[in-house]
Amino acid sequence: MGGVSVRGEVTELLQGLLRLNTVNPPGNETQAAELLRSYLEPRGVECRLYARVPERANLVARIPGRDPAAPRLLFLSHTDTVVADPAEWAADPWSGELRDGEVWGRGALDMKGQVAASAVAIATLAREGFEPAGDVIFAATADEEVGADYGLSWLCAAHPEAVRATYCVNEGGGDRIVVGGKALYLCASSEKATAPFTLRVRGRSGHASMPSIGDNALVRSAPLLERLGRIETPLSLSPETSAFLTAVLGEVSQPADALARLRELAPRAASMVEPMLRATISPTQIEASQRRNVIPALCEIGCDCRLLPGQTQAEIEDALAAALGSDGWELEWLDSVGGSRSSFDTPLRAAIESFIGREEPGALLVPVLLPGFTDSHYLREAFGTIAYGFFPARSMAAELAALLVHSADERVPVDDLELGTRFLAHVARELVS
Image 1 (cartoon, rainbow, N blue to C red):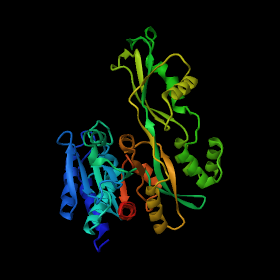
Image 2 (image 1 turned 90 degrees about the vertical axis):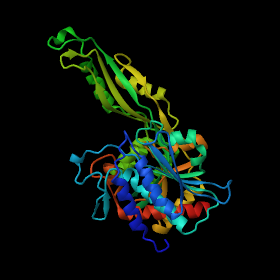
Image 3 (image 1 turned 180 degrees about the vertical axis):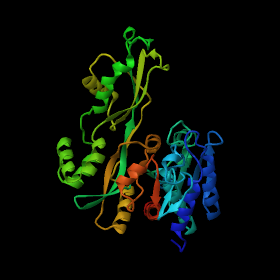
């Protein structure tokens, strides 16, 4: 890449980003946007900051295209992170420490590493004098982790032309796994919807010193909570999961049979695939009496629920009734977002495959359904964008990376940072040159 040390640049930029505390809330992402602007503008990349409030800015950088009607490519990322407890870490979460070829810090994997790689990739293209047919855009947005409308959702509504794109590369995929001797790179072309709900159990309050005079809602909730923890919704094959299983197993008919075969062949892969085959329900919060000496009349159980694309809340209500019975509880759905997909037969797929073919001949690119969700759904809904989650990683095992995201000792290998930077530049050259 023009004799410039991409490896050194992306490492140094990531270290700078990790030293900025952008835990959301409160976010304070403007400091990250300003750091990125100070890196990009001297390298010939035009930048603009968009902010709903001053301290929560989104950066949008651009190499303008020659043809306003040509397809646009967007590198999408976010600069906010989840919280970190330094007591749980073997290094300072905001140190950006380079240790044994890995950069440590909150957000190294989710997703300041890809932020840095996207910035260095677009800077490299600008340095080379790259003149794309359509715009190459890099957006480093605020507020992905909470989604309180300071980030991409707000940009799509308030400044749509800043982020309108034909193709988008985002987070959520790129892991390399080996199943049955086949090297597979996972591309997230679809994702589940998040559909949280609250389960309420009612009783009768009373003084805690005389338990028999009340009807303890917390105690009444216990058997329901246990059944919630064991609930299994029906299995269903999405197009993406069917394509993945076919690549691994050959012909696939019934999801239960495919899952059983995969468990025999690769148990770890099976545990990753199972959430792609069904809706999931996980009780994660509980609230009852606010006073130790008061028997609670109400117990509320907060549940994380993830739906397959196209799946309805009514289907989940049926599964809950079958598992819990129809009496003794109430259900309130909270806001549901996500649950979208992009076609996998696109020029963006071809560009990714050409990179993999050059880096690792014989490896396969396979679509997956992301068990969580990302900001890609805003672009699909607003502009019909073809959006994939893909940032290649082959130095860190996918199983380890999954354990580190949102957890202690998060870190990213420098080798993967360099690989990802080269990948992003390659996609731009292939897709919009």
